[in-house]
Length: 254
Image (cartoon, rainbow, N blue to C red; front, side, top):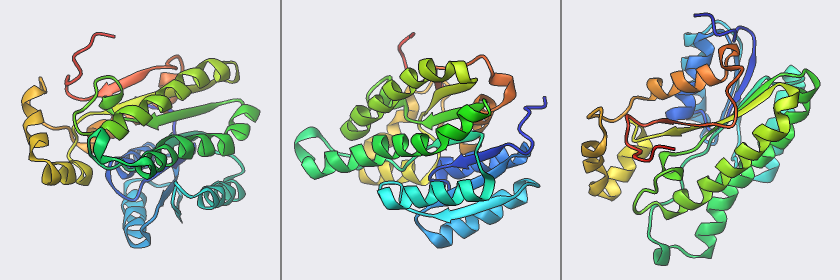
């Protein structure tokens, strides 16, 4: 199936590792031009090489911290100077710390808000005008299964990521007339360094596999395939959805 992504320009946030990197690789395989970003310059360079190896299009690697307003502005400005506009925006950040309500102070809540919600709004605000001018665009937020079914000991993620889903659902209504689709993809327990850290800090996470109907944790490339489909021409009539890629872990029916 031709997904119609050849020479589309995609910005993938937090893509030097984990799910973001896997999405960047999958988009490159489909012929997209990919912009990746991350805080660690060494990891970013390694990721750039992997993305380049996967595809034949150009790869631009930019260093920056998505929770820093100046860094986000630089990421947007540099991307637009290079490509004038982008077609696909994948918003993504690392996960906030684990902990229960009384273990997390006001600073932790503010940091999670900046990391998860504010960084998303800044990226969308920066890249949206070019999409509206075309008019064509895909905005996809990598959230978490926790927005549909809260995960114990992840109160920051459970709470703040839900606000991102509200933002994206509203934008889907506002931007449909510009042929811009807006969706969320909710990863479940997936074999990334984030999951390994969660298990190391709280061994109870390892038992989560027993609650997954498919009987295993997901692989990053499986998640990336779902995101890439939503970014494609083939998903032109899908907007405002939150797609779970969780092996069936979420139990609710809506």
